[in-house]
Image (cartoon, rainbow, N blue to C red; front, top):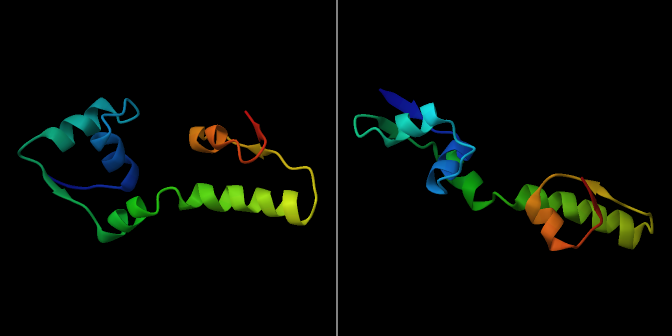
Length: 89
């Protein structure tokens, strides 16, 4: 079987993350599987944190430039641990 991998399943497989379903893990691990990784997936992996950076940068602009009270609502651990902005979760 040929499988086209999206970004998160690939990352979760490489990290041995429990977020990857058992069925997906089995398919990716199967030596008989042909895995195709689209080039956009490789690009997205190299910029995986850019989305978070844009969210934080937006909050910083509202806080530091526009002088507004700002809180980011997110479960994202990287944003929460950065302590760059106030977070609500």
